[in-house]
Image 1 (cartoon, rainbow, N blue to C red):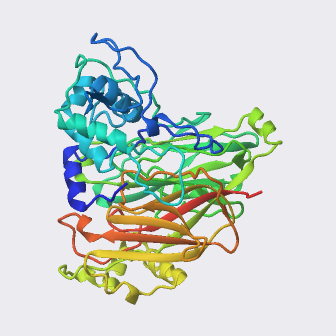
Image 2: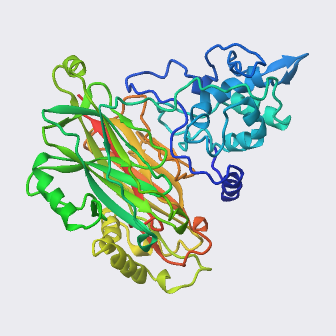
Image 3: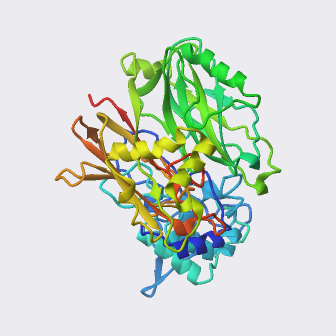
Length: 521
């Protein structure tokens, strides 16, 4: 997928109404052990057979492989035979009915598609849709959503011809692939209704989510279902042992509002027992579905804590309170028995790099001084906020001077870190809204170098978990390199010039990534 320049990105956002669609729009295999040998509808354009009719109550045809037809050797494109199967397999699950994209770009009928043919062509041609920010690296992933060159040509040819349709405009477009592989909804935990205000635009709020466990279990799937997606910026999910419950409840009781303020992880620590992060969630991310023989062991009384980052703007003042939910899948007795009585535990390891973005030469203001910017962070987020950036540079062998010359509006950082041993289950990257590119590389600058994840054009709206198809095992002597870049031209026009550093706020930045592993045995 080619990079999207800033002008193209802005044009595209205007074309599609500036929508932030926060759910994945194509099917995702849930079985990590499956191979890439079987083509899916997303990659081939094939779809389940259906009848063709101009009767408004019937469905558009979905009988071809997406190959354009020819007339006397001249390539032509017909909506029912060529275009509709692509839309049904790759777009309809999100953009029809109550799907998350339907409010922004409805594709319920052939007439809807005709009206937005230009938008469909523009968004697919630059790779914005179907959402798949990852480029071509050294690793193939499950559920690759990108359209083939032939499918893109079909859509462009159709749109260039005015988006003509050869069926009744009211003919329904029915999805032939689900939006994402669903997890078993064994327990659904809905948070207490919470609403902040613009007095604290970046609000980090923790809550206890109690699954009510009375006996040991294995966690096999989990996900955040964001309620008020307009203000839910990102979230972390923590697993907490029962012995830490009293400390969590004390943190809750000490804050008069719902839950407790918790800039920086879960905001509490137990006298004994463990609290550890098991998920980082960003817009567009599907639920985590672990391989069938892996899981996280839970005991009676264990619970979860969410840290949700809310970002408030005045235009969202009338929104109802957020009631985001955590959904979990607990392994069945049959699954545990098939795995020999216990599931292989997974581990989440964070790989963090510096985020140091000086003001450009044409920007002037008191906060362009790094010390002043750091003091503001401390005032906003507390003493630790001023130390995180310095710690990350120390960890990565960098200094402020390394970034001092990055005054053309583009800044970048690199950090090499020791790998946590294990077989990779998934990789994930995270930056904020002026992110430009992200890359994670295994054993860089060696004959064994492997690009694990390359996102040449960062898209904040689509922070997907990427699950390698092939088996990749990390050893003790392996190195993970994290590379991030930022573009100050993506800052709001009215933003006060300042030195942007690693911190929690939406207007701050991060170079954040995680790798989930299982044992390599």
